Image (cartoon, helix red, strand yellow):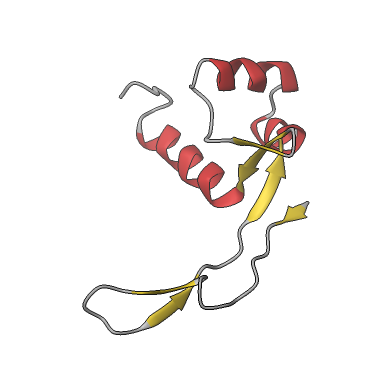
Length: 89
């Protein structure tokens, strides 16, 4: 599994409004199309079709590869159960 790591410097730190605390962006694991397809028990072609129809989990093309943030995938999956699998709901 690929990992996305950022270097901590002043541009990575953001001050929360009204709290006065500093927080840093936490790294998020990236998942490949095949890893997401495996988790959903779908073929890669089916996942590509879901991506084309915008009915699948959020993704981005990074260096020519379709990648998914694990946290986005988990939120999307949870939403499918809350909406009873209906993406329009």
